[in-house]
Length: 493
Image 1 (cartoon, rainbow, N blue to C red):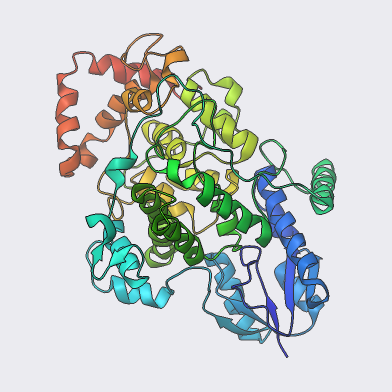
Image 2: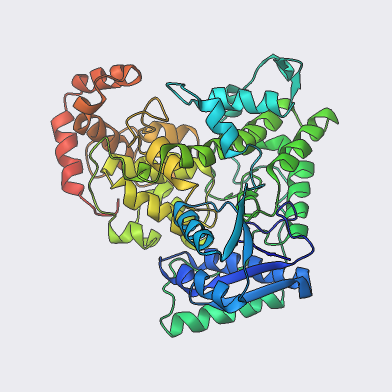
C-alpha cells in the first residue's frame, strides 16, 4: 500500500487518490521563501485544507518546515505525479533516489503528455502556438468536422478584438461566480495574520474576500456560471479594458485550473457543448478554447522544452531593476490611469486579465527595460494564478521578447493609441495619448519611441519591426523624447 503525495496544484479528482490515501503538505519554507501576494497564500492554503477536509480519514495533512521533513514524519514511501516546476522536480527525483518516493507518474493535469509534445516538436525550427493549437484541436476532436475546423477557420481572433462599448462603465453581462468563505478560510486568515505579525511571512498586496474557487464544487460552479451566463459575451471584448469592470466577461478559471481542480479537457468540452447547443457563438467559444488547450498548454510545454535557464534570457539587454513603487504595488503613486488601475488590481486582488498584464504592465516594463528575470519573478509571486511554469514563456517570451524571438515574432510594445482604443482609461487621464513631449505627454506613447530607439540595432533584423523602426526617423523630436524618458528614470508616471 502506497500513499499518493499531492502537491497544492494537484487537488482535483483526476489526480489519483486511490484506496491508499493521500499526503498533503503545508511547507513553511515554500510559503516564506518568496514575497507572495497575501491572497495567493490564502488561496493555496485554503485549497489544501479544503481538500484534506473533503478526503477525511484518507488524507494526511502535515504542516512542516520542508517537504522532505514531511516525508520523514510520514515514515513511509509515497507515489507522486510529475511536479510543475524544475525545483520540485529535482526534489522529487532526489527523494526517488533515496526510496522515499516510490514512483513518479505522468501528470494528468494537462491534456497532452510531455513525451507527446516532444514527439510533436520533433525537429521543428519554430514552435508556433498556431501550429500547436491546430494539432490540439484535431487530436482532441474539438470543434472540428473531419480535418476541417467548424466554421471554416481555426481562429476567430480577428472577431474578438473589439474595443469596449462606448459610454458604458461595465459590460452588460451577469457577474461571475462568487464563492462563500467558510470556517477554513477564517482559520487561514487568522494564521496568515499571526504569521505576518511574527515575521514568519512577508506577503505583499492587500488581504481581501476570496473571489476564486478553491474546491472542486466551487470550480464546477464557476465553470457552469461562466459557460451559461458569460461565455457568449466573452469573445468580442476579450481584449478590451474598462476601469469600472475588472472581470469584464472573463472566466476567472485560471486559479482553479492551476490548482488542479479542473481538467482542461472537461473545461473546453463544456464550452464546445454550449456552441453545439446554440447557447454561445462560435467566435467566443473558439477564443476561450484557444486560451485553455491552446495557449495554456503551449506555455506549460514550453517551460519544459526551453529548459530551466530560459527565464534568464535577455536578448534586449534589459537590466533596469524593478523600482520600489512597482515592486511593492504602490498604485497610489501612479498618475497614468491605465497603469494605476492595473497595479491597483494586482494589489487588491492579485489578478488582472491578460490585456492589462500584456499591454499595460508588460508593455510598461518592456519600455523601461526592466530585467526580465526579475519581472518573471514579480508576475509569478504577485499574481494568484502565477506559478513557475506559467510565467517564463508569458513574460520572457511573449511580453518582453527577451528570448530573441524563440516564441513570439515581435515585441508586444505599443504607445498610448492602443490603450486609448481598447479602454476607457485615457479620457480621464492627466496624460494625452497623442502627445509624446511635455508634462501631459503620455508616458506610454513617449516610452514606445524611446524603446524603439534604444533597441534599434537589436531589432534591426526583425521584419515585423522594420516599419516602426523607420518611422522613428521621421520624428523631429525623437532626441527630445528619448531625453525626456531617460530623465523620467524609475519614477512612477
